[in-house]
Image 1 (cartoon, rainbow, N blue to C red):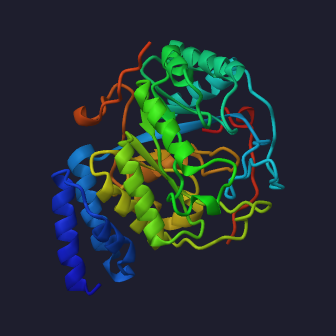
Image 2 (cartoon, helix red, strand yellow; image 1 turned 90 degrees about the vertical axis):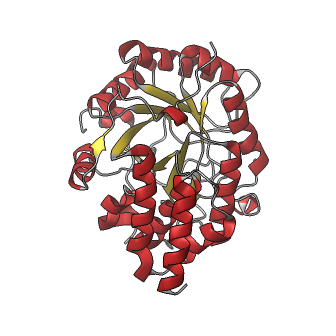
Length: 363
């Protein structure tokens, strides 16, 4: 696009987004295809849409890895896949007290949402009860905290059980487009994933679903997964940037630049103007010094560490928020009225790894 054409397209996109009209596929593709000379204009337009619906608030999220490794699925990006030789710490389920202690540390550090994660195809009923107990323990000590659960594919009745325990949300990413999905995983399908998001939503859990970028996909794949997500109407859209773990099929796959990451975040903001857009895994190694700019399109971020890789310190994360002129969203602050959660019915990366007990005090 020429600068003049880009200006015209951005004005049209911004006008649609602030009115919550659907930005069409061609315009979303145009955002990803824009040049570096237009990057600040793209970020500024996305930032105005973000401030329209979320002001300068940033929601902090924390991940608790309930168990690590030995997942039977073969997702090519994941260090926890059974065939992975990535140097990660592997352990079985941590107990309720340890998980709740970790969650409380994160809440004290500013996290508003705690996400309990366990890799696997889906939970057995015994595992589900273990997670339900942990949800209840966190809610007992911090009733205002939001608790999200991410356990893979759900069977009938499991989403309802999590809601009864007090879970607010269920997190299950689509990851990439339907057309591209078989390239990254063969043990389950794109439709399996959409079915789980739908089941969680039907059960009254707030649906969280997003993407992983940097896996060799085309611009069309990124836009198409955004459009598929838009049909599911998630309340939060995490955008993960591939962390290429050695020992996985994508271990040497380094294709993202900070500029591309920012364009992707802006595209997701235009596609989801009044929905939480969350900066998730890989932001430090791909956005690098441009992390503060990412808060202009995105209004949410993961605090500190991830599941099997170490992020920057919580202090550094909070400093980014403050230095960029944003404020951390408090536990007692409601979500925007039109996006309130549904009520529950009843260069390469260093090969770090962690266990929750290793950093309870590091934040």
